Image 1 (tube, one colour):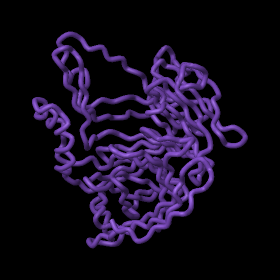
Image 2 (cartoon, rainbow, N blue to C red):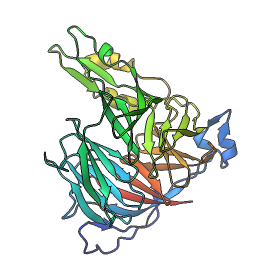
Image 3 (cartoon, rainbow, N blue to C red):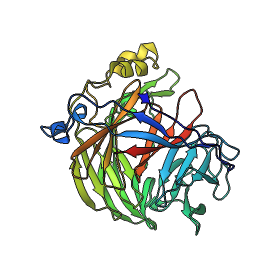
Image 4 (cartoon, rainbow, N blue to C red):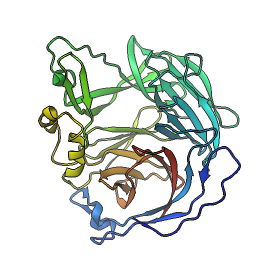
Length: 392
């Protein structure tokens, strides 16, 4: 990575510390090819045959009097360009403008109306965000006349006596959800019986009144990590890299994107749950990175490493996630190395366009108006929000 230049403007008097940088990250072009036609061979994309698009930092949002980031675990971009960030450490939701200016603390921890329980799951809706709480209560936060999210209501969604886990809200009165499965280990149960290597969940479309509109939109496949049962009956779960888990993302206008990690198939569903598009984002087969695998295995107790390795595949999934931007381009997270991450960008019909390399500590949340919205989440340093401008 080559840094050409940077310029730090004086800090604004506003509450958020935003570094207006023009940090140009020049990414060396690949030598093996420079055309998208060369990159698509036998129905699979070869990322090494694509040109690279560069990025430059537009804004960095760091700590301030109003925002003290601890552990940023979720980030969503709204239709007006504002973005919402959830800090799990402080159990707070914050909203920022499209230029990275802090606007408001939407919610904080507590047990009252609009307050967040611990370990909440934050999901995107067609207009705002919702919160899944462990208690089963769901909270909605919708924009007011100024575009600021406000607590609207809370409820428990039970679909014909089924307890469900909400994944998204495509419209004002429908929810994309899967049925919650309660796991109760039995005596002498083996971890692989409780948590199999692969599991699947059928996604349903549910009306706000509890009616199931469609009980089988699609099935999401998940590739689990490694589980170990201790002598006292406790279960320890360890994450592993290169999981063949289908990704589900949602656009600002209510579309749901399903990415198949094994085949590379990408399916698009409209706000009514109807499949409106399918294309292929299959990437040329590549072996797993031995350094990444070794780092993960070393975090597992030595007497369990052999068993954990049995859940590792020799090849990488075709991609780890698929995001659709506002110009109908798919951003496929295709590889993570010890130094950075690779994204392959394809058009709506699956034609490869370019690769983009992002810092290892970044998590891409969305791409809108050629701005990349990232959570910067290093293990041993301050979490930040990075907005990168795409140069094409």
